[in-house]
Image 1 (tube, each protein chain N blue to C red):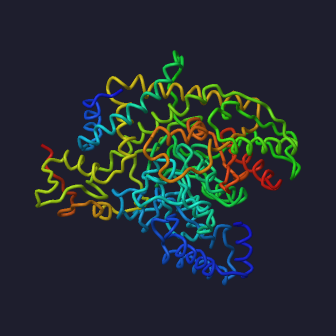
Image 2 (cartoon, each protein chain N blue to C red; image 1 turned 90 degrees about the vertical axis):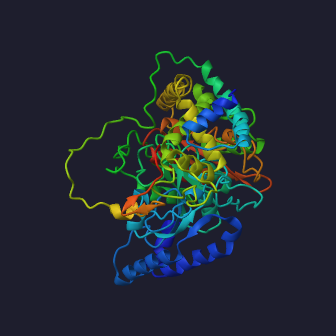
Length: 480
Length: 97
């Protein structure tokens, strides 16, 4: 889609300004119901579009992303534009600088339409934890769009933006992509800079694109990837063992692993049937199907819900009402009065952080506290090593893994909000990729009888995003 | 299972004020989540190192400790002005003790 729009722009079939206005009009019309955007940056978007139009008029060469309307998840900083992380504590926070990923697409001429709704500080699985109200699933307004990049997946599915930059800590790009019927990529840990991303869990977070199709995911990923001196965990990409397929429509010579642990009891029947059909499809396309096992998968969720809260509890210590954001006391009144610094911290966090964020901070604080560190954080770190070894071993045998993205299609708003553990179980197929750092992508493969999208997940070895694109594009072409 | 006192202690460490009702709610919810974590006890991890995160080939990043002529992205003035309370160009807070 990006390539096609780019062609239309450079042949002057449409102008960047017309394109931006077209998307802004749809946002104005549909966002009051969908709530995919927290902030719409109309003025900035039109200014950027004009700049691109001038370049085109001058006959200058423009980047593939120039003039293409994009939305950005509200945990990624955008200079001069409000960046809330879906939290009351940052409800008036104007980012003082750009995240590297945002800067890269801005420098390429991208037209930023606004900031997408998300679960507060990217903690959740449904976007219901946003302080600014939930986003709706455009396929069924009574259902969630997934989370935490639910505003992003909704915006792309409903044509409110061409693509979006989301973030994936335990499935937050892939699961909403599956729920809304779009493509979502979580790159290899370290391949995209996290500078300017409001940190959730630093050893798990990655910025990734949500797009209409696989070709777009590749275009955006290629634009945002690479080493950044401002993120010490970012690396220059060293592509290893890339198998390039010779025939355009065939998967001959490709070994695709089906991990038995991802077809468990409790998986929705329609989801299982849809994914089994994809397996038959890749077999028809010539791939060799190999049943494999990743025995430590069953512990991944427990490991994740120790490590993520532990890291988040440290990262979110900075939100204390001192240097930026809201502050939870009123001076010169007896109401909510605090006369000691520690009370300012406690009242600020009590008032402006949401339930789920408090829950995770406490869970993480507990897992790191004296007397419990060995039983929780250390144990989880060790099992994480074993989960990673599972992937290492399995990728000696196969080129790529194929699994369902989620155990169920989109669930109803409010269905899981009273039971945090049930909500956590939603992430069961997506967290292993974050724990081990491997890249993974969800793409739409089918729909339920009631019209809800179903996603299939492809998982590749470290730095082999190209394998995801190669297989993904062939699946797309085969009219999945 | 967590006791009420443990929940209060964690909230104190986490710098979050909780009401009595919230304490009870989190006691039940956190207890249930921690019960789920019990399954990790089944895994034999003797001699297994702790994972160093999502990266492979983790390397430390070094640079010379010297003053860079690179422009700061944001001025200190601008950053300080973001604080909820500022006086004479400094962030103002309540007394520590």
